[in-house]
Length: 359
Image (cartoon, rainbow, N blue to C red; front, side, top):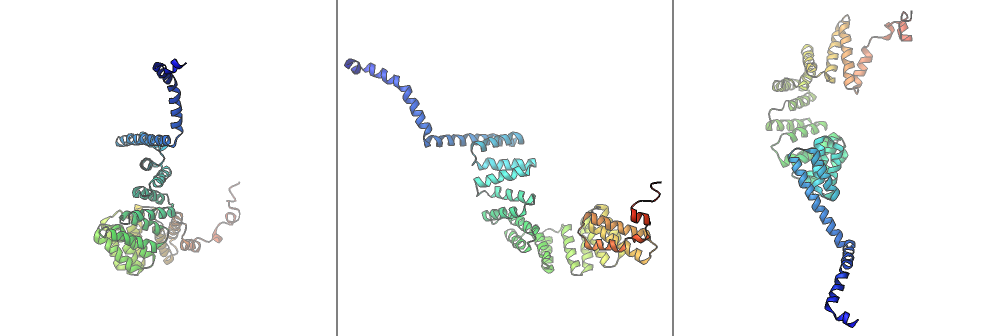
């Protein structure tokens, strides 16, 4: 036994015989250790970045489906991979899958709360989906990240305006103007917000400031003319609308507003022509139908033998209410001027059918 223990060759052989067992034990120890878990996590992150690279290659080829699969593989390997979530948001947005895009951008923001682009994209999609309160919350986060971003301040203002919070809207439109005073759109929206507060002179000033920066805005001229009409300044309103129509003869809103302006000036024939021009461009203009109905009914009131004008008026009012049911005044006019049921056939009035119908 002593010779056996003292023989170097025997000792070496014995150590080789034990080595596989020791290696296995060592592997089990490493696998169970936190350090090994960190290694596995790093390997997953490395693999995720490879999928991201592949996804970007697919995007360059405009292969959205292959790119989507690659980025989804990336986030499965590393759920904190903000870049992959962001790319998925872009892809789903392009595919028109807004709900999935919202989820992807939300994951991107959770992984990286300091990403302005993902935060702004998420806010835009909430806004697009009419989730206005959610949009406001995320827009506020976006402007906190980048206060000097014109579009973020402008979009937040529009959202406040849609929520009927004009004071907050005005604040944000002014911030957008402070960021870039040479761009026209913030002034237009500022004018709308001020007008909703009854601040007509301030609104006019804002509209004019917008037109100074971009003088080819026929719709802004319509807004300006409507404000003039609220002040009773009908002649300047008419001239403003005619200027807008010269810029864009196909702008139905300008013809409709001109019809109303001429109606208030008691130029009924010209007003009727303007309303007809508006409806020829867009037959779903509730105010144009209402105005044309009023003009026809005025003609009937002057000569009650013109029953066709009465019927035309009633039909225009019906059409107006079909487009916009929230018009109490038009409903009242219909009740007032509709033919009396007393003149109808009593069988039809009482039974709802013709007595000869069942013979």
